[in-house]
Each structure stands twice: as structure tokens, then as C-alpha cells.
Length: 196
Image 1 (cartoon, rainbow, N blue to C red):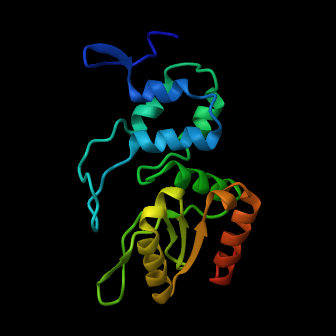
Image 2 (image 1 turned 135 degrees about the vertical axis):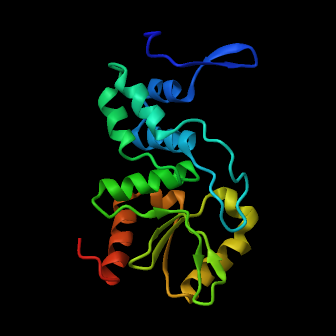
């Protein structure tokens, strides 16, 4: 490792690579995983309905990642540069990142991430993982950790549907079939007027 490129931080008295350097050293990961790690490091904890950790500092910024990649030839440099174009501050989980990478790589428009939606009276409806506001299409990743919030998740989806949203629910089974995932999202976007 080239020490001129390696950002160092002290953690409990131990010198460790900073988040941007750590991310760059992970360039051998598959693209979706590399994006997910980057998304985690740069996540901004914004205010919103019922959100926790508001104002918590990010581990790094997108500018930090860009600066680190620009310092020299990393193993996997082309993948790092590709991942940089896909990293976002508002992704909340690795699976959300993976779904978004599949959709964007297939040529679908990029969804807006984790925005609070309200009805016409101003009452909170939900904060879906991904939305296409212009088309009123939402994409929700339903992981196995959602077993504990199963009833709440169903109610959230039903509130969205009652407000006129199409909701595509993604599980690990669907994510493992990316062409089908893309087909479903594209079908619903086209049904709402997207022309490609």
C-alpha cells in the first residue's frame, strides 16, 4: 500500500485507515457491494418523520471518496470510478443500494431515496426506500429483518396504495432475479407514463 494515499485516523489509540481509504481498498468487491459500502460511509442523517440519529456525522463524504480515488492508481481503479458515480447520501441499507444499482444499470431512471410522503391534508403516509415521484411508483425492499415489523410494513404499503401509489415489493428472491426486478419496475413506470 502506498502510504501517501492512505488516510490514517486514530481509533482508541490505534492507527487505522480512514473510511475513504478503507473503501478504496475494497475495490475487488462486486459493484453493488462497493456502492453499498460507499453509501453507508457517506449517509447523511437528515431530519424527517420519526427518524433516528438526526445530525449524526457521516463517516466520510462523497468528496472524500473522490479525493482518495484521485490520489493514484488503486487496484480496481475503473470499478472505484464507476461506483463513485452511483454512491448516494440517502441510501439506508445494502439491499436498497443493490436494488438501485440494478435499476440504474438497466437504464431505468434513478429513483429518489427515502423521502417522506404526505397526503393532500399533510398527514404522513410513509417513507419508502425508493420513489419515482413523477410517476407515483415506489420500490420497497422487504428484508427478513422486517419479520418483526411485518404488520407495520403491510400497513405502510396499504397507505401508499390508498394514496394512489404503485408499490413494488422486493425480496431477496426477486433481487436474485434482476431481469425480473427490472421488468416489473419498468412495466409500472410505463403504465404511469414513463417513455424511456
